[in-house]
Every structure is written in structure tokens, then in C-alpha cells.
Amino acid sequence: MIQEYNIRVLPEVAANEQRLIDYLVNEKGLNKKEINATRILKRSIDARQRTVFVNLTVRAYVNEVPKDDEYRHTVYNNVEGRPQVIVVGAGPGGLFAALRLIELGLRPIVVERGKDVRERKKDLAQISRTQAVNPESNYSFGEGGAGAYSDGKLYTRSKKRGNVDKILNIFCQHGASTSILVDAHPHIGTDKLPRVIENMRNTILQCGGEVHFQTRMDALLIEGDEVKGIETNTGQTFLGPVILATGHSARDVYRWLAANNVEIEAKGIAVGVRLEHPAHLIDQIQYHNKNGRGKYLPAAEYSFVTQVEGRGVYSFCMCPGGFIVPAASGPEQIVVNGMSPSNRGSRWSNSGMVVEIRPEDLENEELGMKNEELLQTGEGGSSLNMLFLQEHLERLCWQQGNRRQTAPAQRMADFVNRRLSADLPESSYAPGLIASPLHFWLPPFIANRLAKGFQQFGRNARGFLTNEAVMIAVETRTSAPVRIVRDRDTLQHVRLRGLFPCGEGAGYAGGIVSAGVDGERCAEAAAQYCEVL
Image 1: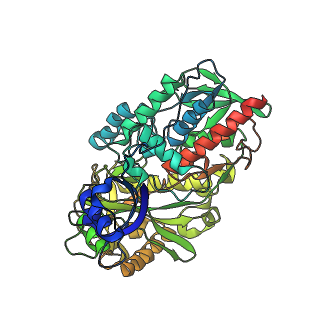
Image 2: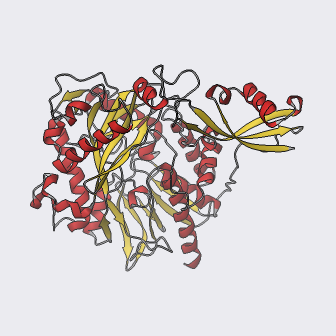
Image 3: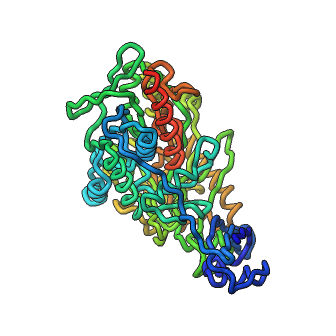
């Protein structure tokens, strides 16, 4: 007999199978000798009260032995000789599109401008060592996309868009811990994710697909109202329908689309800073305990959101026990992002703290840009204006950082009180920090809302607003500044048949899992398109 129970237990019970069995015996009346195994199906932490509990869904095998695997396998057959579909980009949107194409009997040709996930890591290290950013191999470009070396968080709210559980099971099939099927906020970890990505690539290759690294799409091949393939910087031409999954930082792609009258539109983004606290302080605040997390709890997470003067101010991509990394993808940029290893064991916890900006806000003088700089009518017209805003802020930050990857920073309470920081706390940001008056040079539209948001968050969580925390500028890559307009039903571009804008870079996803879900949907749409050719 298999029994499932929803229970609420102390962390030390949830962390030990024998104590969990004892709980089931005492509270649910089971016979200890008849319990052959238990399996935790779902796990979440409830830290709303002073006593922290763990909510579990537990399966008990009573006089039975578990027969099912912990995850569901997907079958991938050989697709050599089958019709091919071009997948541009090897981030989560592209990789899951390629795997789904194989399921559907089509042959994926994956084209990735960056390097494979292992070689890419060497270029990331050089950013901290030499302050040099390789524009084709960085935290945004390369196998695995922006998520590969910026955390690997798998939490998503986009559960109505597709099969989230399938995405998580495919990750497990390729080497991720089965804990991602259990935890309320699943997380693979930056140290574990590269191997999983390699295994996904190997599945594509073993099934007869192709993966081409250091191969950048330079143009779509368009005949009439149909996309026939792509041209690349290597001189190679690849023919077939195109799934365009280039990620949120492929600005050259956006510029090419705008210049060639391929319909795109500006979309809202959020920009701000990375905020870093000592991890122990966040543990104390969130777990209501001066001793922090203790032995049985993970590094604490938080999520804050408020409205300030009609715009959202909120935490984004929170990384407990993590690091802040230099995420620029080109010259004259400073961009910061966060990541965590699988054990979330660093001395710091960080989060993006950002302000919502909508396209109609661009004419607001408080954004600090001259109209002729921002509201351009030439290069792409208004469709690229949010991109221009990102570039303006990243260049401004680079100038404040002495034109290196040394990031301008300010203590949190000093920022709110509009004071200079005489010194800065130790930080996880490897290229280094330089004290800077963020309250003075960040556009007032952003700075004023951040300051008021921090005051609200400090009221919500006593001790959060502190000079032990440091703000590091600038966080701009929360999402794509452009949406590549597609038909709601066919997922094809509104004007060009055979072009399937996909994932975060196309404006239809917001993270690893939602990009993977969108990749699968685009693959299914491409398969339907191939059937009618």
C-alpha cells in the first residue's frame, strides 16, 4: 500500500528520514516495521512565524517496495535524414526546442555564437582577472545562455503556458538532482548546471542533430514572406524553418530585425542594482533567530515588492549564499548579476533590486536622458528605445567605474539618506568595487523609487535596511527590451512564415523554465509548419 500525507514538521524532522518515519508512526498510526521506504514529493519552508516549519508531501511505501523512478524519462530517437529545423541559440529556449524537435522526429541544427559551456568558463574568469569582456563569450553568450553561469534557478510562475514538470524531469534525466522535483523553489546551482547542459548537447548529437559553436547568425534568409534559413559569420548557410532563441542580450539581432523591417516592439523592463547583505544577517531576519539558519535550514531567501509612485519596485533573482558577477556582454558596459553554487554556501546573499520602467516612461525627464539620445527615429525607431535606455545606463555605470569592470557601489543606508559612503564592506564581486554616490548619478526616476522601496522593505523586515548591505550598479538585464511580435496561435512571426521567435530574447519568457517551456511550444509549432510545407 502506498500512502501520501501532507505534514508540517520541524526542520530537524524533515532533514532525517528516520525521524520522519517516527513522525508518521506517532502521528499517522503507521506500523514502523511495515514502512519499507519514504519519498518526499514536495517541500517548502514556512518561516512566517518565530518557529520555522517545513511543509512536506510525503509518500510512504507500506509493505511495498518503490518501483517507479524518481523522474520520468523522455525517449529520444535517431533523427538522421529527417527534415531539419534551425535553432539559433543554445540557451534553455534553444536546447529544449532542439530536444522537443527530436521527440517529434525532426532534426535540429543548433547554431550558437558563443563557446561550449566549459570553454566559456575560461572567458568568464578573464573578466575578473584582466577586466576584458569577450563580446562573443561572456555571462550572456555561450552554451547554456545567461542562466548557465548566473544561478540556475528553476522557479517559475508560468505554469499555465506548458508542462513545467516535464522540463524539470528532463533536467533530472540529464544529471540534475531530483531535489528540483521536490523543492518549492528548485535550484540546480551554477557549479552543477554545466554538466547537465553538456549532457543535453550530447543527447542532441547522439540522435543525429548538429551543434555549431562560435557560429553567429548574421542574417535571416527571407524570400517574400517566408524565412528560408540563416547566414552566419563563418560563411555557412543553414536552410530550414528558424526558431530564434537568441536571449535577452543579442542586441545586434534586434538591430538587424529593426533595420530589415521585421516587426518588433519595445517592451517594459526593470532596472536598478544588486543588493548584497551578509548571508548570516538575512538568515537572522528571515528565520527570526539571532543564531541564523542553524544546522537544518538552507540559506534564507526573501522576496519583496511594493508600489512607488505608480511603478513596481521589487527584488529579482534572489541568490542566497551566492555571488555577484560581472555580466557585461560588450565594451563600455558594466552590468551585474547574481549566482549561487548548489550548496548556497558563500558568506553573502544578494538580489536584484529594480524599478519597473514602461515604454511610455521614456519621455520622463527624470530618466536623465536627452530626447535626441533616447527617442531616436533613425535606428529602428521607437522599437529600440528601451534597448537604448539599457545601453545608456550601462555606459554611465562604466564611466563611474573608472572605465573598467570595477563597479560603482554605495552602502544601502547611505544611499537612502543621500550620504557618501566613506568605505565599502567586503563583497563577493571579484573585479572590485569603487565608492560612488549612486543617489546622485542614477536617474531620479530610478533612485528615488529605490530609496522609498528600501524604506518600505526595512519596515517589513527589521534590520534589512542597513549599512552592512551594499548596492552595486547596475542591473539592467532583467528581461528583453524588445518583443519580436508573433502570432498567438501559430507562434510564427506576424509577417514572416517559418520564423518562430522563442524564449526570453523574443519577449515571451522570464527565466530558465519558462524559456524551456516556450522552446518546446515553438518546436511543436515548427513541426506543424513542416507538415504543411
